[in-house]
Length: 138
Image (cartoon, rainbow, N blue to C red):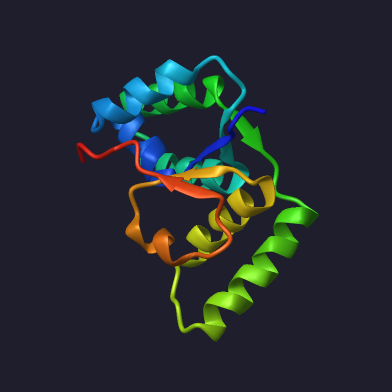
């Protein structure tokens, strides 16, 4: 069984902007396999960022090229169930996580995917299969 890697928004941004050679190399080593994906939540965040910068044509081209290569996972009922459990657990334990990050973490949990991020806040999230940082050079 192959490992599914769910890239978070910051990882996609580092790759698209050319800020992390390490992340790009790791991604290219795994493509065109269907094991590298993003959440539809991440796609929404990326598209929001692009909408705020309509003049950034080169960035838009880089992002669109990257999105074309990746599988986008829909957010559905299984992810909603994982979110409910995750949010309740975090609140019970007094752990804070940004709303969109919590949705992405729930998606990784529901998909039993490795969450690819350099955000240390995810280290406190129980239930994640694993967390990897592909961008140690950032």
